[in-house]
Amino acid sequence: MVRPEAPEDDPASRRPRRRPGLRWIALIVVLLALAYAVLQAVNALPHWLDPFGEKTKDRSGPAVLRSIQNLSRYEAATGDFQVIVDLEKDARFLPGALRGQRTLFVGSGSVDAYVDFSGLSNGALTTDKDRTSVTIRLPHARLEKTNLDPKRSYVFAQQRGLFDRIGQFFSSNPNQQQQLYVLAGQKIQDAAKDSGLAERADTNTKQMITNLLRGLGFKTVTVTYATSP
Image 1: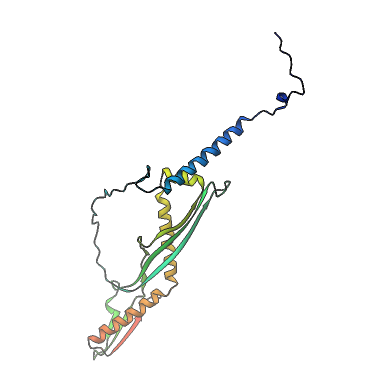
Image 2 (image 1 turned 135 degrees about the horizontal axis):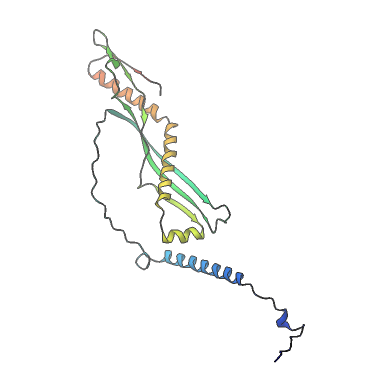
């Protein structure tokens, strides 16, 4: 049996066909929006109601002593520093709302300045015949590496794209936290070099040595330096 053809002015014949690709795109957008809503709802729950909440258990072993070193140096000065690290990561072909993150990290730490006495030679200290005048030759002060305080260092603010939020919800990246600490330590170290901390340590060491030798009976104390800072 031959079915009659639909007339040309039939509205069904002029209705545009739906593309399957648009349905998949719409479905993906809805799923992403749903996942985002679930993440926001879970983050707003109290910790005792959160079905995905974490419970921390310390299973670490005891600390092991690896080595002991004798120190022959004078801690002459210390500087306390704070820096704000603004770290931003973007994807090349995706908007920041989908992929990318920006983190503001407050890093607080200290840098010590010290004078090393272990390299002093026998001729570093000379006296006159009457033992009333003494001359001592010291090395210039050096800076220790940054001692970042984890109790005063923290993430102040963070903005993440949708994909980064979903990825961080299911897995954590400890390398990112380490990168923030490393950057903060480097910036504090650079600030310590330009702060005059080493020069202050030289002055404090000179005053300490002068008072010490005068306490031993020397009336004239001269402090010189063996190397340039």
